[in-house]
Length: 124
Image 1 (cartoon, rainbow, N blue to C red):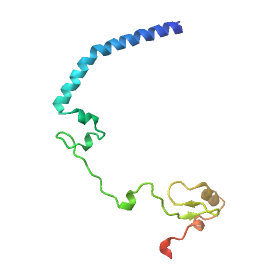
Image 2: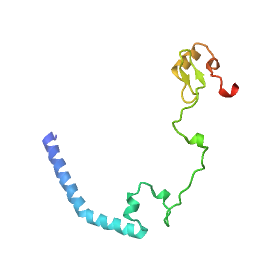
Image 3: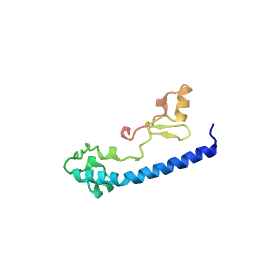
Image 4: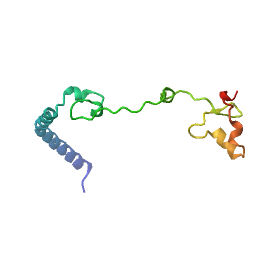
């Protein structure tokens, strides 16, 4: 049975072995990467850019595909949506996402969800 001191000694020995292997293979790995960069025409700028190759227009890389543009109103994320339901205590819900607890409890008590619907401005 091994104890903590033996295991720590083994860890230290393995870490030294890993460092030796890394130092031996480092130069060869760098040469391999440089050869591949030259073969594919990859520059340091290509590696540093935030955009991936999917947006690049150089030869051998896929062209950027533009998604169809959504209407301006639909593209604005985080914009508030008009309330479609209003609770007895002034709570509101747009009708999107999970049903709020206040409305779920009222429906569970037997009340119809439509009773809390807000009249739309177009109905005036």
